[in-house]
Image 1 (cartoon, rainbow, N blue to C red):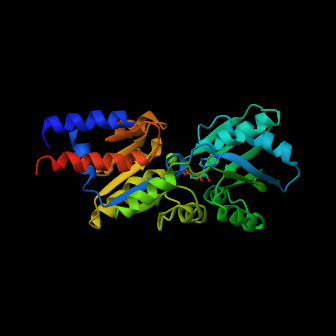
Image 2: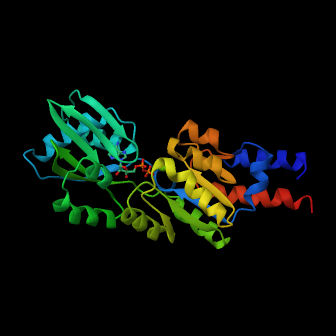
Length: 292
Ligand code: ADP
Ligand code: MG
């Protein structure tokens, strides 16, 4: 493409909320055959809300939520925000936590009044050797609705189950349909559970799902797809997505996400609207069309 056509495409992109880092990002987009998309914050709003809380130990629901919000206050994860917001809305007390630890892709642990507290997924409960068998049926029912299930533990015993739901962005369905009709293969990539991921994917007509992927393994999944001969664009918003965004032929960051993701990407969708990918590819084709 000529420098002039690149400049024109950049200007048009900017007016549509699509920022290109460089000429390469514009040129490569039309050649990708696979789009890998992060779930939370990319396909979904990234602002989960608490939908249910079930307490199974000595604490009632309010007391449990107060303890869990105290724990999650120190975490920056969107799931943590959902817990803290729910406790705030109910006017629950937030208390100081000791020995706070965040286990990436698993959950959080700490101590409150000398009691060990934990909140996270199955993997965290397995690590802490907490028996969650009695909660698993209910958890799976939440996941089948596309919700994220989190287990709470107190002093090494199961204490409850939390359900959190993160709505799909209004623009996502149309974007995915358009990209699929262009023949692009869409792959969902997420740290969330297989069942939750599949439920959200099926609502969007996405058939390929890579779930329960640890944050540090996301870029390896991109490499694998590339090794199988696919040319990959990756869309994401989180710090965890940055290595995968950098690894892909083109990284596409949400302007609503983290700076780290935007710095790693060749394209930024200012409002996080995935329909920007359709527009960006149109610009990419038009730009390269100019030299033929
Ligand atoms: P995603 O790819 O959806 O952003 P992450 O890799 O950040 O997911 O997290 C994967 C899973 O780990 C979450 O679905 C959740 O079950 C658990 N988890 C991570 N952080 C927290 C937290 N602060 N509190 C509770 N659970 C968490
Ligand atoms: Mg995300």
